[in-house]
Structures are given as C-alpha cells and as structure tokens.
Length: 252
Image (cartoon, rainbow, N blue to C red):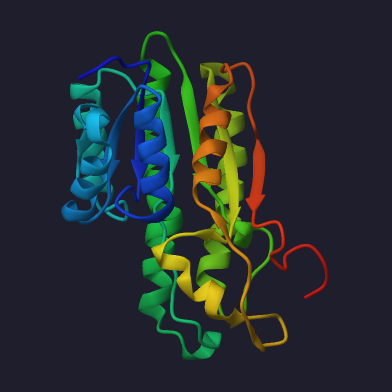
C-alpha cells in the first residue's frame, strides 16, 4: 500500500455514489474497503482508482446479512488494524406502485438492506472505533432527500430513510463518550447510472411526470471528504446536498 492517512469502509461501493466517494477517498490517501453484494463492480471501482488501487480492498458483503457484515468487519480489523470512517451508503428501492399493490417481500427486502444493513454495519464499526487506540472515528449515513419528504409510491424507501435519521441521532449521542462522530448526508438528484430516469421524467406530487435537474455526483464525494476532514471534536450532524433547481423546496 501507498501512503495512508485514514482507513475507511464504503458500502455500495460498486456503483453510483458509493463508487464516486470511494474513488475520492482513495485519491486522498485513504485505504478503502470496497464492499457490496457483487464482486465484479467492486473490482471495476478498484481498477478505476489507477495508481491508488493498491490502497483498495475488495470485500463482497450483503449488508442485510448480519453474519456477512460481521465477517466483513472482522477482516477489516485484521487487515487494516483500525477504522476511521464508515460511509453507510448501500440501499435499494422498490417498484413504484400503490402500497396495497406492493409485495410484502419487497417491503422486507428494503427494510433489511436500508435500515437493518445500516445498523449492522454501524454496530460493527462502533465496536472497532470504541476499542481502538487512538479511540474514535466517524460514521456517515446516507439519508437521502427521502429522509425529509417522499416521492409518490415509495413508502418502503421513505420509511427506512426516515428511520436512518433516528439511527444517526442515536449513534451521535451514544458515540459521544468514545469520540465517535455520526452525521448524515441527504442527497438529492446526484447523477449516476441509476438515476438516469430522473432526467427523463419521474412522478411529481400531483402524479404527473416531469424531468428534474441533476447534479454531478462528484459534489457528493466532495461533501463526504469535507465532513470527514473535521477533527472528531466537530461534526456535520446533517447535510443536505441537492441539485439546485430540483423541485424540493416549495410546494409540490
């Protein structure tokens, strides 16, 4: 490995926001554990790091499986020796249908990934950060604009993202004695391969379809770098970063 200043874990690192954040961290002398369910996209992220790829470690993991998460963090503790940052980013949505038409299994899958998975990862990271020397670290949860307001037909995703806010607050409080800072980044319309439909047209509050502005995903990566640039005596508790012209502020 090359020069390393911090050790980080990014969930959902194989695509989109997770990939952009991982590459930014690697460019800034972090060692990064790239994790997600599929190994191939993680390897692609690592290869995109170029000369910084030596500081990237690919570890497939299903965050919805607590045993898989425990194995992930056991390996991080063994190979990194410490952990300075967890970016809890992995998440999933469901098909946009009225609540009575959505399968119960779809609800459960969203809860297991978005909420339970975030907790499982935070739990393991908290344990490492609390007992390492020097003690402490930072956990950043991806809350999304949906932690504030829903889109139509997104009850599972919106519910889990509201719950992430409660998790963030609890971890922030519980981490105080151990120099563990926990903050939340709420992202709106970052352009990735998964958000191309936003530019074509998505349901509005009145159920009409309309295209929405997007922003470069690199803005999110820069925000994460800023949040983790602070000393552990300071914390960005909540940050909302969104496409300037997206229809969030105002009446829908």
